[in-house]
Image (cartoon, rainbow, N blue to C red):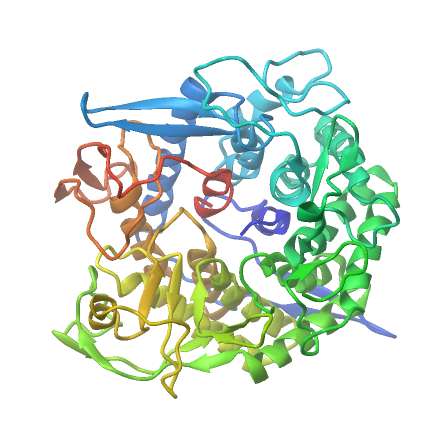
Length: 557
């Protein structure tokens, strides 16, 4: 997902073999070791070929990034139908410090691309003065008159989205992945964190979400005051690690104060907080595990895992949130019969012309005025893995089982579309026929199982395939590994710009097959290369032109 812990939890992966998760809990008299992963994990015969295939795609994409956008935040993919060619240009939407580069460091380590990783360290050395990477102690937002760069004017920078998860998280996870030998990574993370601390001003309980690095002040206007759970409550893992490696408790003390203020603040249901908060009083303003709240809940149990539960209030609060979720937000969709229109026919799903769908467990959300929204977003789908992890930590199989049910629902959001790729939002019709809004007939006829798709784009997000990974590692059931691979194949077929570039583009309508020509499957080769023979994508409203850094940092892991 979006957090540094995602990097930490996978940093010591060797090839495609993922780390075994353990947690050590403090009690009054003893340490209790709890094993998270299944005892026996059997990888399929093609696992190494699949890993090589994705690794090769990453290398090709990385080479394209180095050639066209090195040191910049992203590669912008511009399609030109008239000339039938691609125009690849750099884009700076995350302060211009090389977000793709920094955010991808741990992926380079996971994939054992050590030579590519080693290129980064000299770029931030005090002896060097790189053009686009931060090189001085005083961080500033980079601006450039270079017209070849996609313009993106920034006056203020976002504390959480632009800085903490991508840069501080990326630098510190890379430091751990390099066996803590490259101290410059901690130095740079410290320099940035020192600037971010100005987000706490005017006796604010919570950090302001936006700030100006030039005058070292947060944005205090009325439209900049409102923060949310993710922005203000997803800092503790990175700042805990920074305090540890600098032996300076200031960073952790600051964010712990914010976390405690949220935990102790008014709650709509026990453990469940309003998404939006006012930094001056933390007043509750709607409840969701999805956008603007997700990583707050994600960090609660993962911080406990990381620290050996040194402060039990975080795990206790997470358990309260889950209990309230099971009581108030877990819903079950109505079973229906629908045509079998999925792009894939997997052996553990029906392949008949019509499918009698079973009831689906899904996670609703509550709006500020009390209206319940019967639907999920792609971002919500991290919850399946999070429930499984926390359930194992608490030795609570009920929570684990709900995590598996939610993950199956999210996985089926992929397998039930024409493209095999899941949508940004999928809404349900509850058993009592309540619905969030009125879908049109086409959506209902096609997507009868869930109801409809209000937002049909896929933006290269990792959450569904991440929870499927958790399901495989926690249960050991190989069906989950096959699900994950089928998801990847769908994403590659729909979103890969070309094999030559290795770049991927967001796909705007998952309920349609892309207009590109698929010729034939070449199958996995011994070196893991070449899955489909195809031409590059052309200009089309089907596609976006923006690759977020989390594609490299999370999804490709």
